Image 1 (cartoon, rainbow, N blue to C red):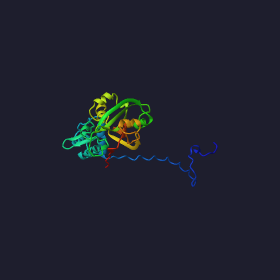
Image 2 (image 1 turned 180 degrees about the vertical axis):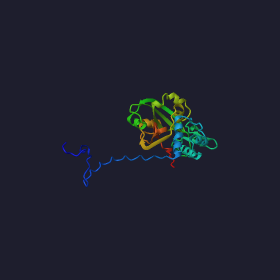
Image 3 (image 1 turned 90 degrees about the vertical axis):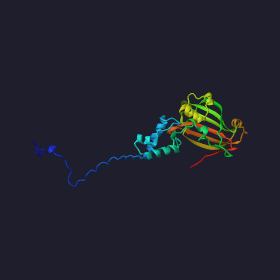
Image 4 (image 1 turned 60 degrees about the vertical axis):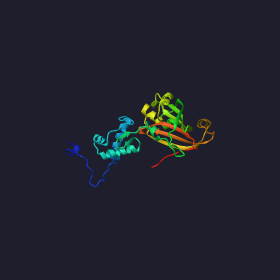
Length: 273
């Protein structure tokens, strides 16, 4: 034996009393917990009803279930459902009819009232439903700007329609309408000419594309030779240029419309509030 104390090989080494202790390594920073999102119950019910509208559970012009039925389905109060439906009505997705119920909004009834998206009015204040005269329909490839606004790829197939809106038989608006071809298969000049109703009514009933919201930009331009000839004005005449991007459910853009409007006897009307 070498004289070492028994068990020395297995002894645990401890720092001497008073010795400096090595600081613990910095703790790993904690990732902040996500803040839970909160949506009022009526907004959640609104989203569920809108999903049913988008899926075609109820067709345009068709009555939706009563507030009592929807309250039972979603297991919420009738007041919650009423508030959700009020919000949908404010966004023109449904229409309340006194004593009859609530119906899915439709563009096919616009022949009996002024179209919701039509902003051009006569200066004399008389409401007039304009006539529509189709000029041409052609298939094209989306340019960079149209692709950006319609959320397509440059070169994707589009349909381009040109038409005149006429008030009192006189041309007032020259429209150029660009549509994603994939959504409007089978849209031809013959089909447009045969339809008796608004363009949006045709898109809705013939292709299942609901035009829900639109964003418009306005500016003044001078009429070029082509626009002047079609609108019956002199080249260089000031025109109101209105660019519209129309969206359907899910804020998906489905139409790019550029309108050139004469303003000698007509104006653009937008009601706010």
